Figure 1 (tube, helix red, strand yellow):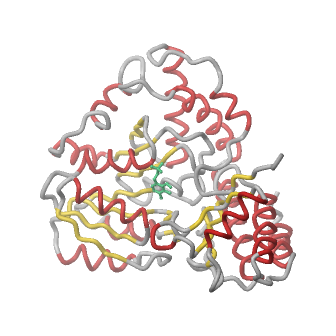
Figure 2: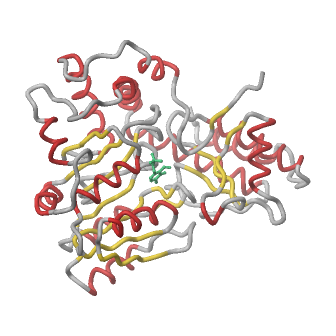
Figure 3: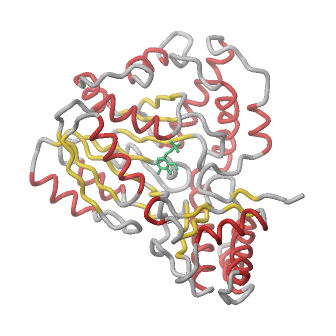
Length: 385
Ligand SMILES: Cc1ncc(COP(=O)(O)O)c(C=O)c1O
């Protein structure tokens, strides 16, 4: 029997107790018991989002949360600004176009970070943008955008700031209120270490105002329906939720509160740094640079002449170690190591050790153990436990 290790940036490993919580008897979604659980989850999410704004929960994947943001805020003909530096930035652009917005896209090479000053310039050129759409952690490359700086720039402009933090939330610091983020979107299956099935959207007062004026048709993902159900004397979701995922998430959020945000982000920064040091020690190129905030996923360029798909297939099928490959135009060119959510130092040791062995098996003579040693040194230096 092959032992398997899921080390991808989503879905991510789920602690056994969290999985088991989701396997408990289904409770009725209009009952008092469910209501209490639902409120506990909503409060737990506000803690992780670091917000006092409403946090709405949808029975959807992360993309459903993104579509909810666009459908509720953007009307046909609205001018919007999208800053795109990867696959998920492109998704903002696609969604805004689909809802009939007049989209201006600031486009960057995949792997680069969005230069905040470019947003200042773009916002200075016209004053009718209703919203700016940005990705927090761009999972397709590992690049993390500087939302604090971007928030400070957008704050001086009437446009809303809408952020995709599907893989960022809980892995990379995100101060929703302090940084002026009007709408932040996330999902259950990444750093919140729960099964897939729920999307979350935080909504500021300014975003509620805009939603009140927006004219795009929306029903299942309606902010208004969702808030009305949340404000019911027995708080709930408007439609039947994936109750098991809510049950799992309640426990996962309890674990996150126990760890505390400071330790949570420190753990992720250490895991990211160890992964990057390991890659460098092996003489491999980091696809999206080397900085402390890159703490959700690390992309490593596949050496010239080697097919990354072959590398990932060997890792998964022979060694049982599942890493992610490149998406879209990066297919076959990078390998992505997830380190968000229920990840610890020895997950990184497994990923790096498997990578060293697979590269050698495919004719790339990287020095066995050198990447592992570099990661070990980081863990000892940082006292990762
Ligand atoms: C940054 C980012 N945005 C959006 C999504 C889309 O989420 P989902 O696949 O849950 O719809 C993902 C998932 O990989 C993501 O990493």
